[in-house]
Amino acid sequence: MSEYTDAAKTHMDKCLSALKSNFAKVRTGRANPHVLDDIRVNYYGVPTPITQLAGVKVPEASMLVIEPWDKSSLRSIEKAIMDSDLGITPSNDGIHIRLPFPKPTEERRRELVKECNKYGEQAKVSIRNARRDANEEAEADEKEGYITEDELAREKKAIQKLTDQYVAKVDEMLKTKTAEVMEI
Image (cartoon, rainbow, N blue to C red; front, side, top):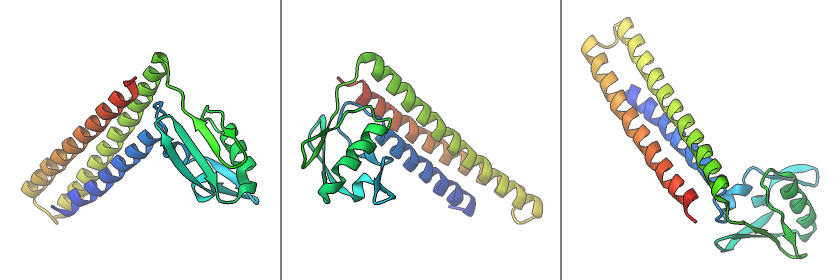
């Protein structure tokens, strides 16, 4: 691999990892601790992620249980979940906070698939941007005389092949996530 394809590959790997992170936040009716990743709790005046304040368990497919290490933070965690756009009402029993994940309706599942498609398209655009950047860098080096015209053509072909591989990976991830979302 050349420096151009290495740089493009690094950027494309980051695109896939961002897509995976975005997909993890999509609620499918299954309990997934990653839906709590962006929720911050006001803990002694400091916005703190829930995962740093409590253990998060998945005792069954449609339930998350949050067990704070400091029981005085129960109310703060519950309030942060209520204020978030999660759309789940937590139940606080004084020791744990339970988050029941209801099965989404058919209409809601279709909306989630659209959301997943949007994330997939964003990832593809980022991958194509990485391709463009790598091609521009190779063209600039050819213009400066660091590489020949033939080497430029080879580099562009290798970069395009890499791009096609990563777009196929995005399509595969999207297909898997769509099947997961549409599953009843």
